[in-house]
Amino acid sequence: MLRETGRVVAVETNAVWVETIPSSLCGRCAARAGCGQGVVSRASGVRGLVRALESGAVAASDCEVNDEVEIELPESAILKGSAWVYGMPLILGLIVSLSLEGVGELATVIGFVAGLGFGFLVVRLTQQYWASRRVLEPSLAARRTPEALIIQS
Image 1: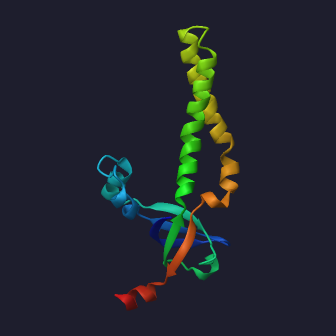
Image 2: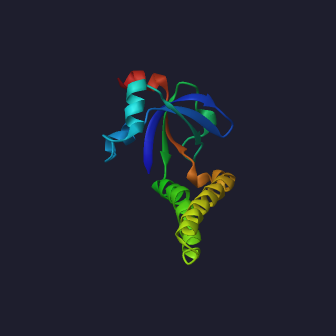
Image 3: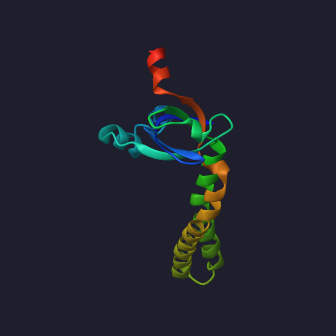
């Protein structure tokens, strides 16, 4: 599980909006020196907003604005999402270009670009399906109130 700490900025019926800085993930990433996300977030101080669903550990109704929460996302969600977003266009591009290989080089190149574009379209059209799958969304793992943070310090 990938975990990140953040501050609750809004509470919904079954989810909360959490403001995060991806610093804990950026510190462990092998590409931290060459990654634009870490550089931009450190330089600009811009924080990301993440919608985290309630879980068996923490209900959204238990959270209040300014609570510090920990959110988690299964590593498999990152792998599945990356494979779909990057893999689908490449696979369709390769299939179309290989099917046009005997026609000519220009047709093969145009076929690859067309397959790539169609792959991006498929990814875009299936976005609602993937968004409805709760396993691919972050969930609440733990909650700490501001009073508990002051006492612990």
